[in-house]
Image (cartoon, rainbow, N blue to C red; front, side, top):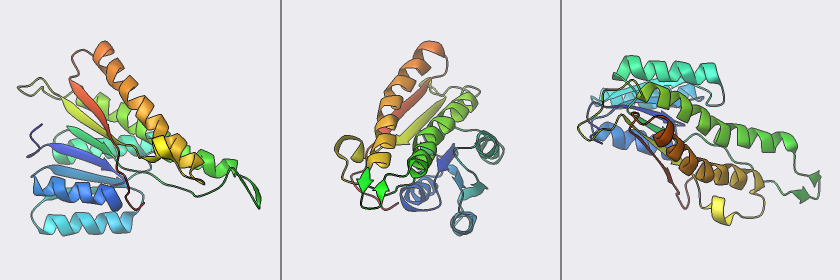
Length: 203
Protein backbone atom coordinates (compact mmCIF):
# COMPACT_ATOMS: atom_id res chain seq x y z
CA UNK A 1 0.00 0.00 0.00
CA UNK A 2 1.18 3.53 -0.83
CA UNK A 3 1.78 5.25 2.52
CA UNK A 4 1.92 8.89 1.44
CA UNK A 5 -1.02 10.78 2.97
CA UNK A 6 -2.51 7.55 4.34
CA UNK A 7 -3.84 7.45 7.88
CA UNK A 8 -1.94 5.12 10.20
CA UNK A 9 -2.79 4.24 13.80
CA UNK A 10 0.13 2.89 15.85
CA UNK A 11 -0.69 1.46 19.27
CA UNK A 12 2.18 1.68 21.73
CA UNK A 13 3.69 4.25 19.39
CA UNK A 14 5.31 6.45 22.03
CA UNK A 15 8.38 4.27 22.59
CA UNK A 16 10.36 1.23 21.46
CA UNK A 17 9.26 -0.57 18.30
CA UNK A 18 6.16 1.59 18.04
CA UNK A 19 8.13 4.83 18.05
CA UNK A 20 10.52 3.44 15.43
CA UNK A 21 7.51 2.64 13.23
CA UNK A 22 6.10 6.14 13.73
CA UNK A 23 9.38 7.73 12.63
CA UNK A 24 9.62 5.59 9.50
CA UNK A 25 5.99 6.21 8.62
CA UNK A 26 6.46 9.95 9.00
CA UNK A 27 9.47 9.80 6.69
CA UNK A 28 7.32 7.96 4.14
CA UNK A 29 4.76 10.75 4.19
CA UNK A 30 2.03 8.95 6.13
CA UNK A 31 -0.25 10.74 8.57
CA UNK A 32 0.14 9.03 11.92
CA UNK A 33 -1.70 8.87 15.23
CA UNK A 34 0.28 7.60 18.21
CA UNK A 35 -2.03 5.74 20.60
CA UNK A 36 -0.34 5.27 23.95
CA UNK A 37 -0.91 5.70 27.68
CA UNK A 38 2.34 7.64 28.10
CA UNK A 39 1.14 11.14 27.22
CA UNK A 40 4.41 12.90 28.01
CA UNK A 41 6.57 10.80 25.69
CA UNK A 42 3.87 10.48 23.05
CA UNK A 43 3.14 14.20 22.86
CA UNK A 44 6.87 14.97 22.74
CA UNK A 45 7.45 12.58 19.84
CA UNK A 46 4.44 13.91 17.92
CA UNK A 47 5.54 17.52 18.44
CA UNK A 48 9.10 16.69 17.35
CA UNK A 49 7.94 15.11 14.10
CA UNK A 50 5.40 17.85 13.40
CA UNK A 51 8.28 20.29 13.77
CA UNK A 52 9.96 18.44 10.91
CA UNK A 53 6.85 18.87 8.78
CA UNK A 54 5.21 15.49 9.40
CA UNK A 55 1.53 14.93 10.15
CA UNK A 56 1.86 13.11 13.46
CA UNK A 57 -0.64 13.38 16.31
CA UNK A 58 -1.09 11.86 19.76
CA UNK A 59 -4.11 10.18 21.35
CA UNK A 60 -3.94 8.99 24.94
CA UNK A 61 -5.39 5.49 24.74
CA UNK A 62 -5.65 2.25 26.69
CA UNK A 63 -5.78 -0.58 24.12
CA UNK A 64 -7.75 -2.79 26.52
CA UNK A 65 -10.54 -0.20 26.81
CA UNK A 66 -13.25 -0.13 24.14
CA UNK A 67 -14.17 3.52 24.62
CA UNK A 68 -10.55 4.67 24.85
CA UNK A 69 -9.54 2.94 21.63
CA UNK A 70 -12.72 4.02 19.84
CA UNK A 71 -11.66 7.59 20.56
CA UNK A 72 -8.18 6.94 19.11
CA UNK A 73 -9.71 5.47 15.94
CA UNK A 74 -11.97 8.51 15.63
CA UNK A 75 -8.97 10.82 16.09
CA UNK A 76 -7.22 9.00 13.24
CA UNK A 77 -10.25 9.45 11.00
CA UNK A 78 -10.51 13.15 11.82
CA UNK A 79 -6.81 14.01 11.70
CA UNK A 80 -5.68 11.66 8.93
CA UNK A 81 -8.72 11.21 6.71
CA UNK A 82 -9.31 7.60 7.70
CA UNK A 83 -7.68 4.52 9.17
CA UNK A 84 -5.79 2.89 6.30
CA UNK A 85 -3.15 1.06 8.34
CA UNK A 86 -3.12 -0.27 11.91
CA UNK A 87 0.16 -1.34 13.53
CA UNK A 88 -0.26 -3.06 16.88
CA UNK A 89 2.85 -2.46 18.98
CA UNK A 90 1.34 -1.94 22.44
CA UNK A 91 2.62 -4.53 24.86
CA UNK A 92 3.97 -5.20 28.33
CA UNK A 93 6.02 -8.00 29.88
CA UNK A 94 6.65 -9.46 33.31
CA UNK A 95 9.40 -11.86 34.33
CA UNK A 96 7.89 -14.28 36.80
CA UNK A 97 8.28 -18.02 37.30
CA UNK A 98 5.20 -20.22 37.42
CA UNK A 99 6.50 -21.37 40.80
CA UNK A 100 9.23 -19.36 42.45
CA UNK A 101 10.74 -19.02 45.90
CA UNK A 102 8.00 -16.56 46.88
CA UNK A 103 5.24 -18.89 45.70
CA UNK A 104 3.16 -19.32 42.55
CA UNK A 105 2.97 -16.86 39.66
CA UNK A 106 0.65 -13.94 40.38
CA UNK A 107 -2.65 -14.47 38.58
CA UNK A 108 -3.17 -10.70 38.49
CA UNK A 109 0.08 -10.05 36.60
CA UNK A 110 -0.66 -12.89 34.15
CA UNK A 111 -4.11 -11.47 33.44
CA UNK A 112 -2.69 -7.96 33.01
CA UNK A 113 -0.23 -9.11 30.31
CA UNK A 114 -2.96 -11.04 28.46
CA UNK A 115 -5.32 -8.08 28.75
CA UNK A 116 -2.88 -5.60 27.22
CA UNK A 117 -1.01 -7.76 24.71
CA UNK A 118 -3.69 -10.15 23.43
CA UNK A 119 -7.06 -8.59 24.20
CA UNK A 120 -5.69 -5.13 23.42
CA UNK A 121 -4.51 -6.34 20.01
CA UNK A 122 -7.90 -7.89 19.25
CA UNK A 123 -9.68 -4.74 20.42
CA UNK A 124 -7.62 -2.63 18.02
CA UNK A 125 -8.11 -5.07 15.13
CA UNK A 126 -11.89 -5.13 15.37
CA UNK A 127 -12.30 -1.36 15.75
CA UNK A 128 -9.80 -0.50 13.01
CA UNK A 129 -11.34 -3.09 10.66
CA UNK A 130 -14.75 -1.47 11.11
CA UNK A 131 -13.24 1.91 10.17
CA UNK A 132 -11.35 0.43 7.20
CA UNK A 133 -14.57 -1.01 5.81
CA UNK A 134 -15.68 2.59 5.18
CA UNK A 135 -12.56 3.44 3.13
CA UNK A 136 -12.67 3.76 -0.64
CA UNK A 137 -10.75 0.82 -2.17
CA UNK A 138 -7.39 1.48 -3.81
CA UNK A 139 -6.75 0.44 -7.43
CA UNK A 140 -5.58 -2.91 -6.00
CA UNK A 141 -8.86 -3.30 -4.13
CA UNK A 142 -7.39 -2.67 -0.68
CA UNK A 143 -9.15 -0.73 2.03
CA UNK A 144 -6.63 -1.33 4.78
CA UNK A 145 -3.65 -3.19 6.20
CA UNK A 146 -3.30 -4.49 9.76
CA UNK A 147 0.06 -5.52 11.20
CA UNK A 148 0.31 -7.30 14.55
CA UNK A 149 3.46 -7.70 16.62
CA UNK A 150 4.21 -11.18 17.90
CA UNK A 151 7.55 -12.38 19.31
CA UNK A 152 10.05 -15.20 19.10
CA UNK A 153 8.76 -15.93 22.62
CA UNK A 154 5.56 -17.24 21.01
CA UNK A 155 7.59 -20.25 19.82
CA UNK A 156 10.64 -20.33 22.08
CA UNK A 157 9.83 -18.65 25.39
CA UNK A 158 12.27 -18.55 28.27
CA UNK A 159 11.87 -19.24 31.99
CA UNK A 160 9.76 -16.48 33.52
CA UNK A 161 7.97 -15.66 30.26
CA UNK A 162 4.79 -17.69 30.76
CA UNK A 163 2.46 -14.70 30.51
CA UNK A 164 4.33 -12.97 27.70
CA UNK A 165 4.73 -16.15 25.63
CA UNK A 166 1.06 -16.99 26.08
CA UNK A 167 0.01 -13.53 24.91
CA UNK A 168 2.26 -13.57 21.84
CA UNK A 169 1.32 -17.14 20.96
CA UNK A 170 -2.29 -16.01 21.10
CA UNK A 171 -1.54 -13.19 18.65
CA UNK A 172 0.07 -15.61 16.19
CA UNK A 173 -2.94 -17.93 16.30
CA UNK A 174 -5.43 -15.07 16.17
CA UNK A 175 -3.87 -13.34 13.16
CA UNK A 176 -4.36 -16.19 10.67
CA UNK A 177 -7.88 -16.91 11.89
CA UNK A 178 -8.89 -13.25 11.84
CA UNK A 179 -7.49 -12.75 8.35
CA UNK A 180 -9.45 -15.75 7.05
CA UNK A 181 -12.69 -14.66 8.70
CA UNK A 182 -12.17 -11.12 7.44
CA UNK A 183 -12.04 -12.45 3.89
CA UNK A 184 -14.94 -14.89 4.20
CA UNK A 185 -17.36 -12.70 6.14
CA UNK A 186 -16.49 -9.26 4.76
CA UNK A 187 -15.63 -10.03 1.14
CA UNK A 188 -15.62 -6.37 0.25
CA UNK A 189 -13.32 -5.28 3.09
CA UNK A 190 -10.09 -5.92 1.22
CA UNK A 191 -7.98 -5.78 4.38
CA UNK A 192 -4.69 -7.64 4.83
CA UNK A 193 -3.50 -8.89 8.21
CA UNK A 194 -0.05 -10.17 9.14
CA UNK A 195 2.13 -10.70 12.20
CA UNK A 196 5.72 -9.58 12.48
CA UNK A 197 7.99 -11.48 14.85
CA UNK A 198 10.91 -9.37 16.09
CA UNK A 199 13.68 -11.41 17.66
CA UNK A 200 14.42 -8.77 20.29
CA UNK A 201 13.23 -5.27 21.04
CA UNK A 202 13.23 -3.41 24.36
CA UNK A 203 9.78 -3.06 25.90
